[in-house]
Length: 362
Figure 1 (cartoon, rainbow, N blue to C red):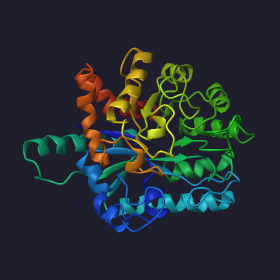
Figure 2 (figure 1 turned 30 degrees about the vertical axis):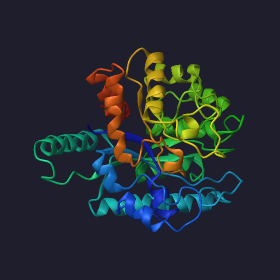
Figure 3 (figure 1 turned 180 degrees about the horizontal axis):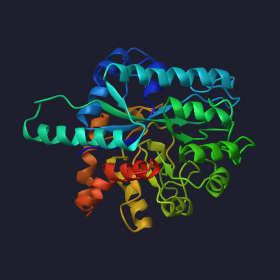
Figure 4 (figure 1 turned 180 degrees about the vertical axis):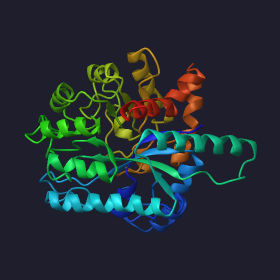
């Protein structure tokens, strides 16, 4: 089954982590075998495994914060540095596209053509495995944290360069809004950025908003919304997750919530100190998907936004996941819980397709 994953930090892995994503996960692990540091030698994502797992379309991020609290590889002292890093990450995607490795999707016609090509390949592959290589991987470009956008007026430049989704903040006090771990609302730059997003048709990703910024942003922005990689506070009570009221607000806007695979977002009271993921499995991910479906009363608002290799690896992923190709195990887990085939297709790709097509004027 074709899968759409709404959150992968691919360029960040390639450039800031210096991983060659053209190689397999296993080759990258071998190359990092002697390295120290979190998640080295434990990666789960690379292009061969994405093809194997039929991740035909993903939301590929640009990530370069400038919060005033520099963190190596992700947070930089000035917005000018963040701007340069994010432009370099975008150039990486464009270089891949120039060689036919990926296809960057920016509007409905190319989205429909891309999915049709993957469906045709999948039908051929099922009939004669290995008969032909899959089409290029499809990327929709997003920015996680708007710090690289020097001012709201510059958003139009980023849109012309291919940006189609935007999460205004990340962890900490972003330039446009308070993020995870804060109780800060929108900054003075936030409302004009949201106005530009609505004017240009850039989708609002509410992931990582503080509670205060979340409600302020929904009151100001009238366009399509999503939570690309967000779990349920009712199951894991932490501010990084969304409350049922927040999830219902997204559902009422016909938005979609992508389940994230980071163990600390899946396991109640998880502590990185014990480094234990032994009791967190893909079934735990399905618990969060099911919770969203129960809130909605249907399967139209739950999806996948794995965030795999978002600064963590196998040590902080479901224990029965080896690589991103194992996302193909989720359909059977959903079926075992009584989800219909239509429900499964909605969750694995259909809901993201509907949201994009609606936002882009299908």
